[in-house]
Amino acid sequence: MGHPVLRRPARPLRPEELTSDRLHRLVADMVDTLHDYGGIGLAAPQVGESVRLAMIEIPGGPTRYGELDHMPLTVCVNPEIEIVDETAAGYWEGCLSIPGLRGFVERPQHIRVAYLDLKGERCEIEARGFLATVFQHEFDHLDGRLFVDRIQDPTRLAFEEEFARYVLSSEDGESVDGDS
Image (cartoon, rainbow, N blue to C red; front, side, top):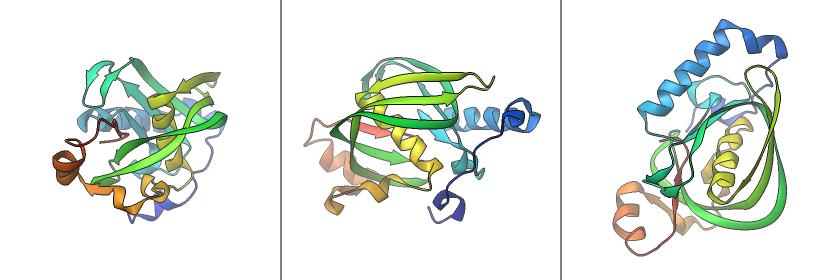
Protein backbone atom coordinates (compact mmCIF):
# COMPACT_ATOMS: atom_id res chain seq x y z
CA MET A 1 0.00 0.00 0.00
CA GLY A 2 1.38 3.37 -0.97
CA HIS A 3 2.81 2.38 -4.35
CA PRO A 4 1.10 4.47 -7.07
CA VAL A 5 0.46 1.45 -9.35
CA LEU A 6 -2.03 0.12 -6.77
CA ARG A 7 -4.11 3.31 -6.94
CA ARG A 8 -4.58 3.76 -10.68
CA PRO A 9 -6.82 1.84 -13.05
CA ALA A 10 -4.89 -0.78 -15.01
CA ARG A 11 -4.94 -0.72 -18.79
CA PRO A 12 -6.68 -3.43 -20.82
CA LEU A 13 -4.47 -5.97 -22.52
CA ARG A 14 -4.58 -5.91 -26.32
CA PRO A 15 -5.33 -9.20 -28.17
CA GLU A 16 -1.82 -9.34 -29.64
CA GLU A 17 -0.31 -9.18 -26.16
CA LEU A 18 -1.89 -12.48 -25.16
CA THR A 19 0.68 -14.48 -27.12
CA SER A 20 3.70 -12.46 -26.04
CA ASP A 21 6.57 -14.00 -24.08
CA ARG A 22 6.43 -11.01 -21.75
CA LEU A 23 2.84 -11.75 -20.73
CA HIS A 24 3.54 -15.46 -20.27
CA ARG A 25 6.55 -14.63 -18.06
CA LEU A 26 4.32 -12.28 -16.03
CA VAL A 27 1.71 -15.03 -15.57
CA ALA A 28 4.40 -17.54 -14.53
CA ASP A 29 5.85 -15.03 -12.05
CA MET A 30 2.39 -14.32 -10.65
CA VAL A 31 1.68 -18.05 -10.20
CA ASP A 32 4.98 -18.42 -8.34
CA THR A 33 4.13 -15.43 -6.14
CA LEU A 34 0.63 -16.74 -5.45
CA HIS A 35 2.01 -20.12 -4.40
CA ASP A 36 4.94 -18.67 -2.43
CA TYR A 37 2.54 -16.63 -0.30
CA GLY A 38 -0.09 -19.36 -0.02
CA GLY A 39 -2.71 -17.08 -1.52
CA ILE A 40 -5.82 -17.78 -3.56
CA GLY A 41 -5.79 -14.69 -5.79
CA LEU A 42 -3.42 -12.13 -7.23
CA ALA A 43 -3.73 -9.18 -9.64
CA ALA A 44 -1.02 -7.83 -11.93
CA PRO A 45 -0.85 -4.38 -10.27
CA GLN A 46 0.24 -6.13 -7.07
CA VAL A 47 3.44 -7.18 -8.80
CA GLY A 48 3.99 -3.77 -10.39
CA GLU A 49 2.29 -4.36 -13.75
CA SER A 50 -0.61 -2.02 -14.51
CA VAL A 51 -2.55 -4.37 -16.80
CA ARG A 52 -6.01 -5.90 -16.40
CA LEU A 53 -4.94 -9.41 -15.45
CA ALA A 54 -5.83 -11.37 -12.32
CA MET A 55 -5.76 -14.99 -11.25
CA ILE A 56 -7.58 -17.14 -8.74
CA GLU A 57 -6.76 -20.65 -7.57
CA ILE A 58 -8.54 -22.34 -4.68
CA PRO A 59 -7.17 -25.67 -3.46
CA GLY A 60 -10.49 -26.92 -2.15
CA GLY A 61 -11.20 -28.96 0.94
CA PRO A 62 -10.25 -27.77 4.39
CA THR A 63 -8.16 -24.62 4.15
CA ARG A 64 -7.29 -21.71 6.39
CA TYR A 65 -10.41 -20.09 4.91
CA GLY A 66 -12.67 -22.93 5.96
CA GLU A 67 -14.07 -25.72 3.77
CA LEU A 68 -13.89 -24.56 0.14
CA ASP A 69 -14.78 -25.95 -3.25
CA HIS A 70 -11.81 -26.47 -5.56
CA MET A 71 -11.24 -23.95 -8.34
CA PRO A 72 -8.35 -24.63 -10.70
CA LEU A 73 -5.96 -21.84 -11.62
CA THR A 74 -8.06 -19.36 -13.57
CA VAL A 75 -6.33 -16.47 -15.33
CA CYS A 76 -8.67 -13.60 -16.19
CA VAL A 77 -7.72 -11.06 -18.85
CA ASN A 78 -9.75 -7.83 -19.07
CA PRO A 79 -12.43 -9.13 -16.67
CA GLU A 80 -15.83 -7.56 -16.12
CA ILE A 81 -18.24 -8.18 -13.25
CA GLU A 82 -22.01 -8.10 -13.44
CA ILE A 83 -23.82 -8.13 -10.11
CA VAL A 84 -26.66 -10.64 -10.37
CA ASP A 85 -28.02 -10.05 -6.86
CA GLU A 86 -27.11 -7.09 -4.64
CA THR A 87 -27.59 -9.11 -1.43
CA ALA A 88 -24.32 -8.68 0.44
CA ALA A 89 -22.42 -10.66 3.03
CA GLY A 90 -19.17 -9.87 4.76
CA TYR A 91 -15.83 -11.62 5.14
CA TRP A 92 -12.62 -10.68 6.90
CA GLU A 93 -10.27 -9.87 4.01
CA GLY A 94 -6.50 -9.69 3.89
CA CYS A 95 -4.13 -8.79 1.09
CA LEU A 96 -0.54 -9.22 0.00
CA SER A 97 -0.50 -5.48 -0.69
CA ILE A 98 -1.49 -4.70 2.90
CA PRO A 99 0.46 -7.23 4.96
CA GLY A 100 -0.47 -7.77 8.56
CA LEU A 101 -4.02 -6.39 8.42
CA ARG A 102 -7.51 -7.86 8.18
CA GLY A 103 -10.71 -5.94 7.57
CA PHE A 104 -14.39 -6.85 7.44
CA VAL A 105 -15.79 -6.07 3.98
CA GLU A 106 -19.32 -6.61 2.73
CA ARG A 107 -19.81 -7.37 -0.97
CA PRO A 108 -22.58 -8.69 -3.24
CA GLN A 109 -22.66 -12.48 -3.06
CA HIS A 110 -23.93 -13.39 -6.52
CA ILE A 111 -22.03 -12.17 -9.57
CA ARG A 112 -21.27 -13.11 -13.14
CA VAL A 113 -17.70 -12.71 -14.38
CA ALA A 114 -16.79 -12.37 -18.06
CA TYR A 115 -13.13 -12.44 -19.13
CA LEU A 116 -10.71 -13.60 -21.78
CA ASP A 117 -8.44 -16.55 -21.12
CA LEU A 118 -4.81 -16.56 -22.28
CA LYS A 119 -5.90 -17.92 -25.68
CA GLY A 120 -8.19 -14.92 -26.16
CA GLU A 121 -11.36 -16.97 -25.73
CA ARG A 122 -14.30 -15.40 -23.91
CA CYS A 123 -15.25 -17.19 -20.70
CA GLU A 124 -17.99 -16.67 -18.12
CA ILE A 125 -18.29 -17.83 -14.54
CA GLU A 126 -21.21 -17.34 -12.21
CA ALA A 127 -19.96 -17.06 -8.63
CA ARG A 128 -21.68 -16.98 -5.26
CA GLY A 129 -20.58 -16.52 -1.67
CA PHE A 130 -16.90 -16.71 -0.88
CA LEU A 131 -15.87 -17.13 -4.52
CA ALA A 132 -17.83 -13.99 -5.50
CA THR A 133 -15.95 -12.10 -2.79
CA VAL A 134 -12.57 -13.36 -4.03
CA PHE A 135 -13.27 -12.26 -7.62
CA GLN A 136 -14.39 -8.81 -6.47
CA HIS A 137 -11.36 -8.41 -4.19
CA GLU A 138 -8.93 -9.24 -7.01
CA PHE A 139 -10.71 -7.19 -9.67
CA ASP A 140 -10.77 -4.17 -7.35
CA HIS A 141 -6.99 -4.11 -7.78
CA LEU A 142 -7.52 -3.57 -11.52
CA ASP A 143 -9.49 -0.41 -10.72
CA GLY A 144 -7.02 1.03 -8.21
CA ARG A 145 -9.00 -0.04 -5.13
CA LEU A 146 -7.92 -1.91 -2.01
CA PHE A 147 -10.08 -3.76 0.48
CA VAL A 148 -9.47 -1.06 3.09
CA ASP A 149 -11.37 1.36 0.81
CA ARG A 150 -14.48 -0.79 1.26
CA ILE A 151 -14.46 -1.13 5.04
CA GLN A 152 -17.63 0.53 6.31
CA ASP A 153 -16.86 0.18 10.03
CA PRO A 154 -13.27 1.19 10.89
CA THR A 155 -13.53 -0.70 14.19
CA ARG A 156 -13.53 -3.88 12.06
CA LEU A 157 -9.94 -3.40 10.89
CA ALA A 158 -7.34 -5.35 12.85
CA PHE A 159 -3.74 -6.46 12.85
CA GLU A 160 -3.52 -10.19 12.05
CA GLU A 161 -2.24 -11.13 15.52
CA GLU A 162 -5.12 -9.36 17.26
CA PHE A 163 -7.55 -10.67 14.63
CA ALA A 164 -6.50 -14.25 15.46
CA ARG A 165 -6.57 -13.64 19.19
CA TYR A 166 -9.79 -11.65 19.55
CA VAL A 167 -11.90 -11.85 16.40
CA LEU A 168 -11.51 -15.49 15.38
CA SER A 169 -12.00 -16.61 18.93
CA SER A 170 -15.28 -14.65 19.23
CA GLU A 171 -16.82 -14.99 15.74
CA ASP A 172 -17.70 -17.79 13.44
CA GLY A 173 -17.17 -15.44 10.46
CA GLU A 174 -15.02 -16.62 7.60
CA SER A 175 -11.83 -14.92 6.52
CA VAL A 176 -10.86 -14.21 2.95
CA ASP A 177 -7.25 -13.56 2.20
CA GLY A 178 -7.12 -12.86 -1.49
CA ASP A 179 -3.40 -12.67 -1.83
CA SER A 180 -1.41 -13.61 1.21
